[in-house]
Length: 175
Image 1 (cartoon, helix red, strand yellow):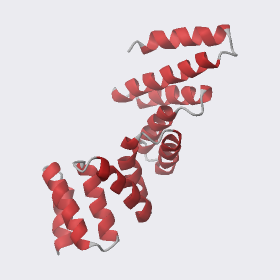
Image 2 (cartoon, helix red, strand yellow; image 1 turned 180 degrees about the vertical axis):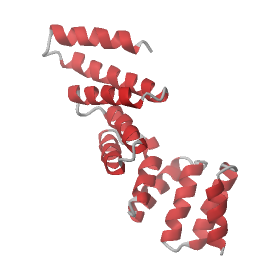
Image 3 (tube, helix red, strand yellow; image 1 turned 30 degrees about the vertical axis):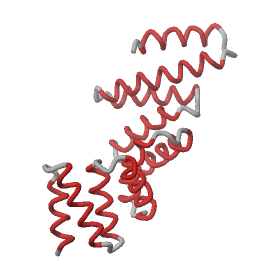
Image 4 (spheres, helix red, strand yellow; image 1 turned 45 degrees about the vertical axis):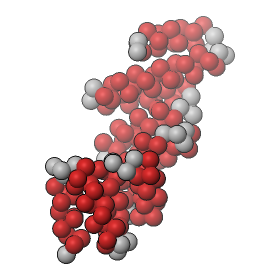
């Protein structure tokens, strides 16, 4: 977890030998990890520069695309966030934690089929994800699958009993 030192060493190795692909890949990975650390500390602007630098060195760095997507989503650039989440998932299909935020973004964009696919995949992995259940309920409303929507909202209410929206939509759907 000494990302700063790792970055310094990889940078030096990369400077000494620009043809050393392993040094560039290591630097890219260390920059993405540092970006994640900064993101967790709510330093989005600085984290963004680390993710962008990581991608300059390695355009196949899935965690860097993931981190950049988080920042873009937070900033309201939903199209940019979707593109970066998709690229991250394309490079690393094992990043299943992307399913929920990407599904939410597709729901907000009105692409209910894609939202349904992603949120359903997320629930198959973790049925106890309140956010996935809530947004799947919203998708089910759009599909006019009322009973399925109620079931999703009821589970979301149980999993996150302080989420007022799940309670509201459970009542609205029942009406």
